Image (cartoon, rainbow, N blue to C red; front, top):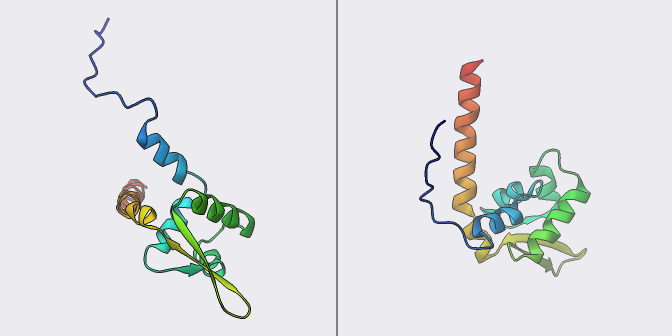
Length: 117
C-alpha cells in the first residue's frame, strides 16, 4: 500500500475566493461578454453579433447578472430611440488578465489537439 502524502497547501478560507470568482464568471457566455467588452463599450446588438451562437434571451440574462455583481456597467444613452451601452467596471477590468490567460492556454490546447490528429 502506498503511503498518503501530506498536502502542504494552505487550505482556503471557508468561502474560497477562487470559487467565488469562478461562480461569477462560469455562466454560459460570461467570459465571452467580458472578452468583447475589454477594448471598448458595446451595444446589445453588437455583442449579439460578436458572440456567435448566443440567444438574445441568454445574452440579456448574462448581462443582467454581470451588471448585478458589478462586473459590467449598463448606460442608457440619451438618443432617439434610446440605446444602451455596456462596458467593464473597474472590477470587470481586473478580470482581463485572467481571461487573456485562459484564451492563451485555449489556443495552445487547440494547437496540441490539432497536432495529435
